[in-house]
Amino acid sequence: MKHPLRALFLGVALACAPACAAFKLGDTQIANPISAAHSIDQQAYALLHAYAAVLEEATDIVADPATPLAFKRALGQAERAATPAAQTLQIAVRGYVRARAAFDTASAGDASGVQRAAAALAIAARELSAAIAAAEAPIAELQGLVRARRG
Image (tube, rainbow, N blue to C red; front, top):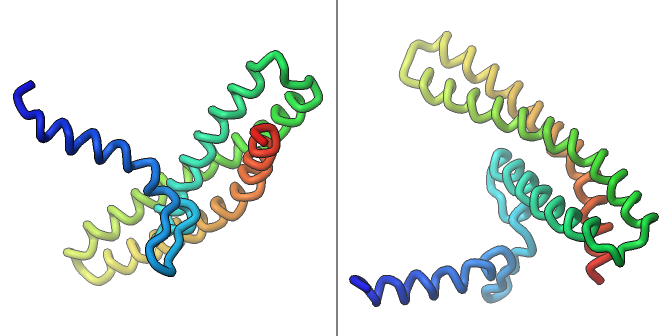
């Protein structure tokens, strides 16, 4: 190995990484990435990642032959509600990121271009906020079922 010290530090960093999602420092405690997000696009990405993680766990639960059929059906129904909400959220976050990039580009230009870009960014932010609000409940329901099965 060419750089054993680097490999050691990388191993330590990777071992500590899962603890970053929920940590406590003094009186400050961050319970999950969604509450740790500072901007609306960070909230959207955190919710999308939470959805992906819960969906992966739900897939494992459904593949388990010991899982009761009624519970599998409930997971399927919750997934059918959460997936379209997550897809809409993904589209909204893409629109917001594009509007933000257009605003950043227009900031160097004339005032009318900045106004148009600011209006488009405000619309995209409202749509993203609505998509986050609409996705939270179905994703939370799917997450609740997965947690209930996990015990």
